[in-house]
Length: 278
Image 1 (cartoon, one colour):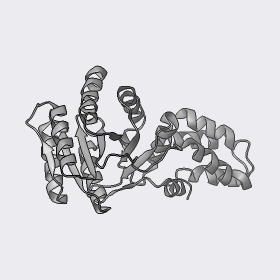
Image 2 (cartoon, helix red, strand yellow):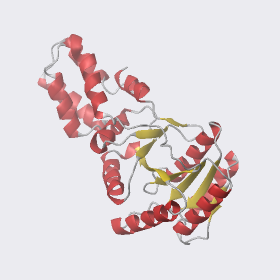
Image 3 (cartoon, one colour):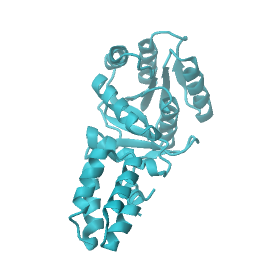
Image 4 (cartoon, helix red, strand yellow):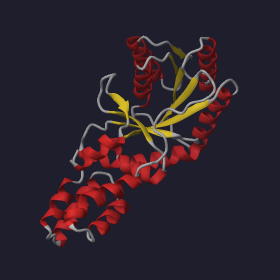
């Protein structure tokens, strides 16, 4: 990734022209770090000695990342419920399946729920994934009430004493009110029987600042607890992870790095920062 390579190279030279600063600024903005953070970082860099640059910048960027836990939150209930939300096309349904596969690989029992009933392709997709990873999935008829699918799923998960229920939800964004009502209803239905431990928002890292707008919309609508960032494959666009955490104070909990079912891991803050600097 080496997001800050050009910046470090310039600082080591101990002689940076305005043209150099302009080029560095343009490169950092292109990484989706965002103009405000870029200008804040450059202002700090202009006051640094070359020998102090790496440590100071690392501390600065680290302070922008969320301090909240990155693990899945625990509860007294045996079955932990995770809602996966996000706009269509962000990788939401695939992320739900990948999360289920990850949890299963950790020795947990998992049930999937296809509550995106308004898009037949979403149900077909998650059923195909579920079959490939040998995880049961609860689904309903096309255009049926998503909350009814969630109700059936939490009932099944509790009766079977399963460790996790992962619910894929619809990604329509035609009005904020519809989104809020739909997701809030699913939460209410689940909470009548159990706790909703996590509501994870899936953000496509390649959508840049548009991803920030999506995050703001969902945070306004429901109690987002963290993020799954998809397509974070080592490209220079990796700055969006910093920008999202700085803007929201919420942690990235998982990242999708490829198309395969195993291309999904917990977000490693130290490894991420190392990738930005080295």
